[in-house]
Length: 324
Ligand code: EAX
Image (cartoon, rainbow, N blue to C red; front, side):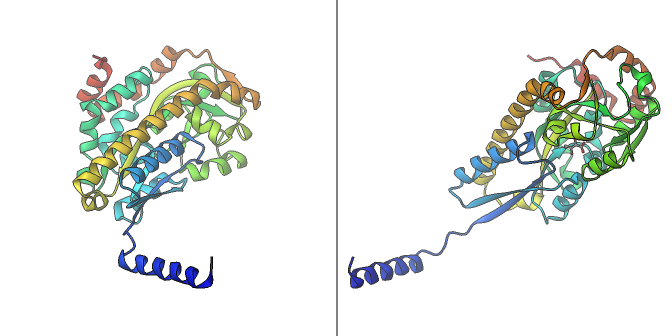
């Protein structure tokens, strides 16, 4: 191409750029506490792909890792971060109504948990975020939590007695472990691995996907499949962000959140199917036969307190829920 023709093309390109102002692009930051190769990462990536495509690039989703869930929620409340994707762990400290879904042995299985949270029972809890300066957009999923420790195999409730167990900053969970005679030690996820490495705590409890994604087998020898509590996830966003969207973009965002929920749940299901074998291969000793009735019986005093202190009617509705 001759110099004059190249110069002409360059002039045309500059003229075209000047004529059409660069399309404004809004960035939404979503923070979550796990590696990108995790069930939260899968959910965030699916939401990003769906929303960026639906808005033709007018929005960009920026996914960041921050392993302090309480800190992210505080940032979403003041608006320095637009959205949180994480567990209900510390959320009850911001929206007390959420605590009802953190009760041990409340959900029978994944189908029960997903069905209840997607039903009007779960939606009515999300509505209560609005009064707290947050938007509960959609339920996500962390998974059923199991107990790990570095001291000995846990075969029954008595084996939990005396263990220093890291819990989330969640009074409902802390009550359960103190009722079992453990020493619950609440801390943010960011502090967990150093605490396990230094022996500040003996154990912790988390879903298989979290244990696998963070290689907790490197600092924990024993795993017991207690499934003592289902850990819901949440997508929580800043109200101003939602209000500034057009109705069409808000509809697209909610559709993208549903795509994220599906990808998140699919990854939990996949990790549940393969995670225990993977952890055994990495050297963990796994107790699979757990006397759930014995753990439930040992927690009876805690259940009585939950009935008194939490929304007993919602607890009853959740337990009674059946798929239609
Ligand atoms: O949300 O803090 C925890 O144990 C959570 O399960 C983890 O951050 C994933």
